Image 1 (tube, rainbow, N blue to C red):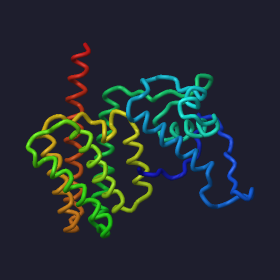
Image 2 (tube, one colour):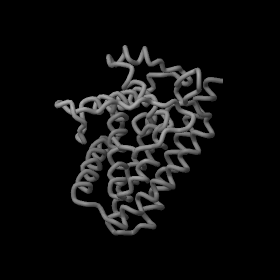
Image 3 (cartoon, one colour):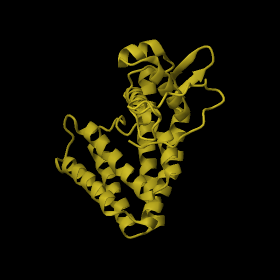
Image 4 (tube, rainbow, N blue to C red):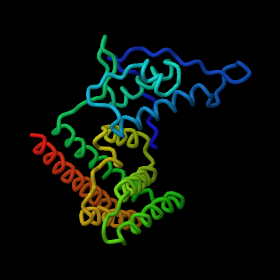
Length: 258
């Protein structure tokens, strides 16, 4: 999972008391202590639940109910809600608390334009700087896993979820190769909209998925050739194709609902 850089609290968010950090000896420690690990774990669990659609749009997230659900005190829950609001996943309204952020279809689609520019830049930087052996091995391993799915010539039960995980691994590898913490943080903000989670895109068309996976091969070739402009162009086109697919699905869903 990508880690975001430390952010200053927004003026619109409530202040969150510091979580005490103490080592077993009782003295302050620079090491990653248990209480901080718990706070981060709670944040990660809530983020996953949101991305998986376990909460409704505009649903109020109660500290008390979340505390009971995760079986932790309200202190790490409060810190997690604050962090997720800073990331853009939640919205905070004074006197009303936190709720899942909602956006209209046009705004959701616009995020793909931003993501295409950012991930295109990441691909160019990866080509300029090169992939180290570990990152290249991760990318090729994910490619091979995708190749095995495509080799069947059709999608079977569970392929969509598996390909979502493969897709995330491929894009994460390029971000690691780009070696830009700020870029990672900005891309993560684009991902922090439930409907845009790589694992939640409703890929059901084998031919479309085949073309998308072929893009991953072409992007890697450009990166290995150190052709930054081509890698950037291919990534932009790749994200644009996902945007068109998502738009078509959203339009179909809206039409069916109407």
